[in-house]
Length: 162
Image (tube, rainbow, N blue to C red; front, side, top):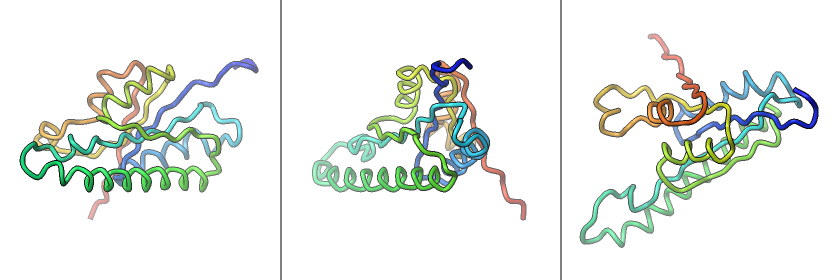
């Protein structure tokens, strides 16, 4: 890469799960920490905070009273996720990552960020849901693998054998 050229962009999706933390740590260890400070990518870490109304998932008496509490909890979770991502980057001496929170469905948010920044790679963790849970909840990684306009790396946390 000639000097003056912009580095390719890597987007990493994070949430409150241990699989997400593992995927971010795995990515930092393999693409960033060994190259300090000449990272091969510009790093954007994205957390998609669900909308409180969609998280409640019901409409009826009492909904309006519940939404502010759900929204406050979702905001608190978003702060924890971002702080954890910042701490992990700091522990790996990875500085300069852009860490952002958007409100909405993670599948759409991640694909939109990929498009906006012309990302070369999207990294997401795998929750390892079975077929039924995946059908009910939807799979962010599956959606992104089919809809993101870049390569998608799905990082799976190794299962501990007993």
